[in-house]
Amino acid sequence: MADFTVSKSHKCPSCGGKLIFEPDTQELKCDFCGNSYSPEKLELMEQIIPIDVGEADAAEDDKCEVVCDNCGAVLITDNNTVSTFCAFCGSPAVISRRLQKQFRPQYIIPFKITKEEAAEKFVEFAKTRKYVPRDYFDRKNLDNIQGIYVPFWVVSSRCQGNVRGEGYKKRVASTDKYVLMADFDVKYNNVPFDGSAEIADDLMEAVEPFDISQREAFNTSYLQGFYAQKFNLTTEDMSDRIMVRMEKYARETAALSFHEYDSIKTGACAIRPYDLEQTYALYPIWFLNYRYNGGNYRIAINGQTGKADGYLPVDRFKRSIRLIAHRIVDVLCCILAILPVAALLFGLFMLGMHLINSGGFMIALLVAVCISLPLIGMGVFGNRFKFDIGGKTSTLSEMMTRPITRMFLKRRESYDRIYNESNMPVGNRPSASEYYDPSAKVNVEVSELFSNSENLVTGDN
Image (cartoon, rainbow, N blue to C red; front, side, top):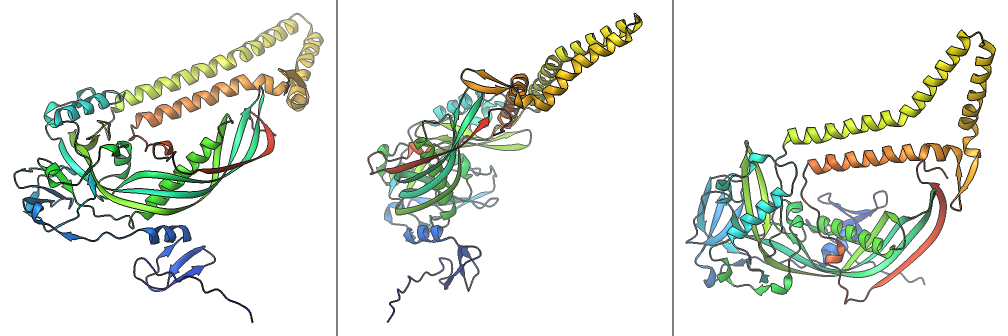
């Protein structure tokens, strides 16, 4: 009699309904509420242990909640701290009420820098941005800096990953392309995810990292004179964010394994986080809602390290001048590139006219044919005329077009870089190496397969 294995039954994380695997989408779908989950996401969510909400204890009797009527943000502070505006949206419509329920963190990182130091860190940060308006700095706005303990879920997890990609090794006139694949099993430690729906995730990631060696057991005395926000997002709510960040770190880990290549491009990536651990902590952040020309710009300063980042206004005049100047240089480069050809053609035209006026029409026609045939031949057979340069074969067409093409490619890259820089986005999250656990067992296997050789400029095989 045949033996059958009964598969593990999975229930919907949202409603507890039965999940059915859908072959067309490769996801599990709930018959009751209709939500769908990838197998990897479902496995991650099953590892998350819910944290219960506890009533405020005796040590928290002197705390109250400050609620913003405009954005709904809820902050916790002591009864002696007066709030006249919301730290998140800048609205003055705030009310105080008795602390109802408290989410006690497992640990806290106390503030290390003062309000005055945070203001200086903000000024230093803003002055590094080229396109900030000159009249942006108003000392009155700096008085609105508020210190807030932001709720973070701190996740540690091992991660199995498989990443495919392409590696490139540059030669003199071409580049060799390799198909790469990396299988690895690594651990990432103490990756923070803010548990606040009111705070932009990219802003919190931009002021990372935090030094957890300075963490302390939670004590309400650290909250004196500051605000603390209660989390309104759990790790279960943020499972998509966790998967996205782990996938990015998996790609970066694979890239570190491909160190012998001049450049790489990662492609398909599959990851499986496991042995997930989560802790709930409060991290110190100084917030500044800076008002300028009717706009509200939020700045965050790491209350432990002083790292600042945020959204800044753009001086459109400065930006336009910089981009126009770049385009003018592009036009000049184009003129310089075609000037020798134009001069040659003009010289040949004048020579032909002189010969015709001198009665040498047949001589002029013969000269024109002698000049045209090589040019036509180069266009038709240019890729067949090959020369050895530095041990690498190069065609005649490549030799003539490569310098100009490279110049215009570099000019295009330069323009894109200036355009993105002038938008002044917030900084990037820390790299995988910041949370990579070197003490944990690491298994990395890299396989390489030569694909082909491509021209550096045209991409022709």
